[in-house]
Image (cartoon, rainbow, N blue to C red):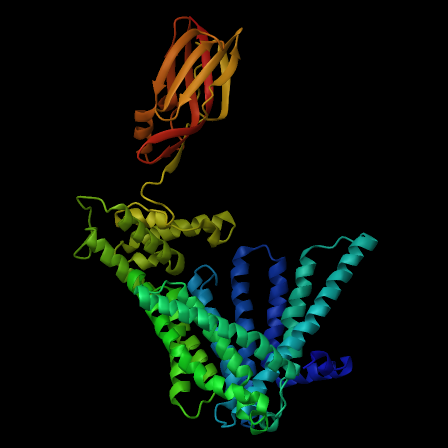
Length: 621
């Protein structure tokens, strides 16, 4: 179907937009609020206000599909206008309640973003199914959702042309008339176009006479061509790949790898979408009896049976991951999708009715249930897993944290660190109040809050506090990318505000950002050269004076290994007294002293120096 053939005139579009505002008053208020707040967010510089505006913006966006769904439900059952308004008022109070339940910063913890996304997804599918919940005609349901999809494409094309045109016009004003244009005005154009005009155009084309859809037997030829020659070949290709992988599992008896879950899920989504797009060709008598459409009957009959082994493989993969690492939001959602897929597949295999409305119903139920259960269940799962590891490593005895006789091994510390990092990032430091005293957590939380508020930047700029929580639990934090034999990088700094006595020396040389290599570091000293030779393997510094052929004076060498090991045990290695990194050299004719301002060191089983800077002091005896 050519979308351009269905484009209305400008006059008709304006009339239909005004009519849709009267038809969907609460939805219109939502998009108007979202647009105003979006424009405000582009301008605002005060973060404290930005948090509240982010919440208001998100709530307003959520109201759009919710209020459209409520209005369509009342229209389907021919409610009077004021009865419909009362229903939407209930939805309005729900949004107000949810506004106050949200975190101060919606995106401070990812659990709120996940919850919001699931609620939005549920409202979208509620919009797709609610006018047809009590109606038996499945074809009207298909035509209604086809209309919504094409309306969305039409609105997207309209608004993109509008947005691009306005942006070019604004740029032309700058280039041709030298008018200064603030870059934020381009963002504001797209906010108005995307958040205001796009939903207005979409709402103006939502079908009013839903009963007439039941008798509409039209089917877009382009849709059939796209599905038959693009989607279905891809479906067949991935089916062969997944079945081949399944055969490999059976032959080698290897458990399926984690990423196969995503592949099976996306394959199932695309395949079911293909079937939904072809639904009228196998349901409508006028279409299914056509010779070229008979193959669709066979395909749809065997497709869901072919999915059964893949669903089994999907459950094997995700349950293995949960068994090994516990439940997180991502694994919970994959498991929820696997359960939903299993329900749909079993329904179409067993049921004789094969009602396609089961698909959006399953999705919206899973979305709403998961929205309020995904985070609590994930949190409890990871807390339980952490508690098990603390007990196993003798860090937790009878519910109390203790100091074990032997520190946990590297792998255990790394695994516990990963859990702590996850809990801090997703659920906050209150996740540890079972083991750490509330007053300590409160003091830490208050200190961080003051630090964040005083900094003038968002909370997410501060990163994880797992480094602070892990020592409270009795072990060192290990980054997830670290390996046991990997080197750690230390930089030792001296406090440059402390004075250095140079009165005993004649010459002063600056050793700035020296990178260690096989060649000695050389500089001129009177008519001779002075050399500093560093041996990384032994961490020795040798100092001598002479030329390229002979040594005039050997001032000896120093070994920094013991010093670096001792300093690495200190908690604070970035404000050392210069005396800790000051070393004397004595030769036959000269005396010298090196004071390091900083030394960069890799440490694994051995220490070795990479870089240094400081000063060299020299004098003749």
